[in-house]
Amino acid sequence: MTTFSDLPLAEPLKRALEEEGYATPTPIQVQAIPPALEGRDILGIAQTGTGKTAAFALPLLDMIQRNRIARPTHSCRVLVLAPTRELANQIAESFRTYGRHIQLRVETVFGGVSINKQIRAMKGGADVLVATPGRLEDLIDQGAMTLSKVEALVLDEADQMMDMGFIHALKRIVKMLPKQRRTLFFSATMPKAIAELAGQYLDNPVKVSVAPQSTTAEKVAQRAHFVRAGDKQALLNVVLRQEDYDRVLIFTRTKHGADRVVKNLGRANVEAKAIHGNKRQNERERVLEAFRNGSLRVLVATDIAARGVDVPGVSHVINYEIPNVPEQYVHRIGRTARAGAEGIAISFVADDERPYMRDIEKVTRQKVPTAPLPEAFAAEAAEVGSRHVEAGEDQRGPRGRQGQGQGRGQGGRGRQVGGRGQGAPGRGAGKPVEAGAERSGAARPARGPKPAKPAGGDAPRRGQGGGPRGEGAEAPRGRRGPRRRGASQGAPAYS
Image (cartoon, rainbow, N blue to C red; front, side):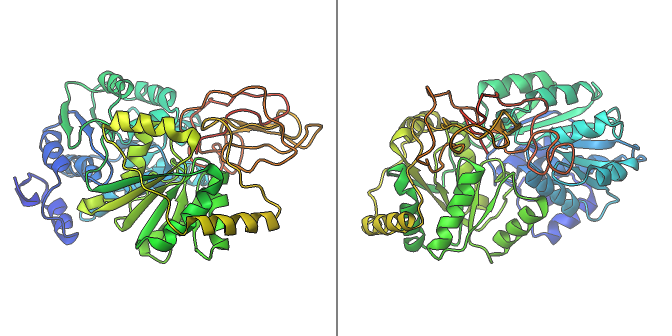
């Protein structure tokens, strides 16, 4: 099989693919589409940018076209679960593109927008519903949806959903589905926990894979610079001046860290924008569109917000802060070298992040080459330092290992946001300090380091913001961070 015309797809789907200029299937599509067309369950291991969305969308659209039935009210025929609203939007758009010549209704359900509009949209049912687990639970709890008519379930980015703490929501949702259904399960990595989850949901699946477990994209040229945490901004300024880039995606650990990098890049006359869970949905969409069309060339993002950033022109990925989950590194650098292109991944490694790099190299079975600091770095570090002194800012990096925020917050326990307590002003001294943030003189260190939290939680918790899930990205139901006296001590929300 060498072309899409060789696949036994419905004619309207082939016509849409031809209009999109799709001629040759990718390896994951070659392996997954034929058994999926036969109705088999699929277990797919594929990195981002390999064409896996079409690998599950095309056979399901073929099922819808060949078996025309009335749309089930308050339900859907195909349910696709995704970890973030950006990815949900991207998947929904792919279904619409491939299914443009068939009678098709595609709806999306995710947080950050009005739930009432989504309730009205689901009254008449949908052929395909792409949803994040948290908001889907909200609609079910309000009696606006039922899953009893679902014919096929797709779990996309399953490893990321588990990292974000959606395992309990997934288990609850799957229990509501008919036992007789098709299930297509896709993940960029396949650690033991994901394999066990797949074993519970799949019935004699066909296993397809286009990359070994936890490996990085072959066409990504990787390098690491060892640098003090407080000098990372200076290094970033130099790298952006010296590198010949098309579009750059910069990863930070926290939402506030992303905003701080954007602010400091502005001081260096570099236009940049940030996307994360504290940004409103329409703002995130505007920034992503500017990044896609090239009017914005530097985007700063948290791990969760970057899911669904499908931009072929990303030439560079910069790990401003190193993830403490090795698989997250695989996801990050997979944002470049998409669709067969080449890319560059650069990591800024502080002393306390070296153990994370060793873990990454162990899991990916690759040694990341180290590179010396650029010649212009020393002068830039001095310039950045003087600039922050004049502004009365402290640019020292966090103490201890990643994810160990310290400092005494103001006020009482307050509400929990992504696992962090944020209270109203009270008798506490100083300001809350999150990992990677500036450390003010008034902040007092905590008594001892707290263990790093797993990646995930890029969202306000229930009851904050506009809808039942607030204005941020999806958050797992009922998982609230530990509360501590004096508000925000301890591990910050990973975002």
